[in-house]
Length: 95
Image (cartoon, rainbow, N blue to C red; front, side):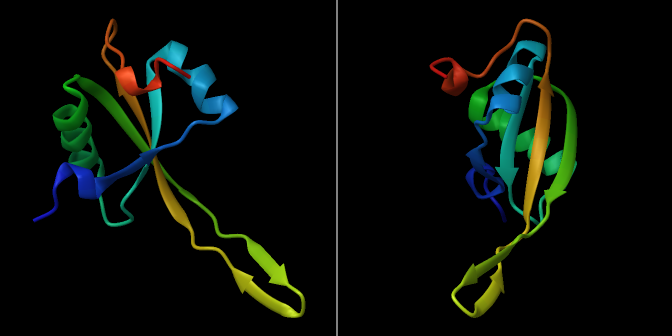
């Protein structure tokens, strides 16, 4: 059985994601096999907040070169979690 810490890999802190924090939207990199219900329960368990909505998307892979060798990075799954009004996640307060 997957734990909440297996589902939520790390928070994604970019310029766009920090702008969305004012709208109570937080972005996480999640396990590729996690679905929206598992993501919701994991965020609620770890951060003790109420999740209203979960949107997921795949970040596509990119082609990388090292000299003549061409490879690709792995694609990753992101989740944008919307919290209930008046709630926030403390890990993002210092950003």
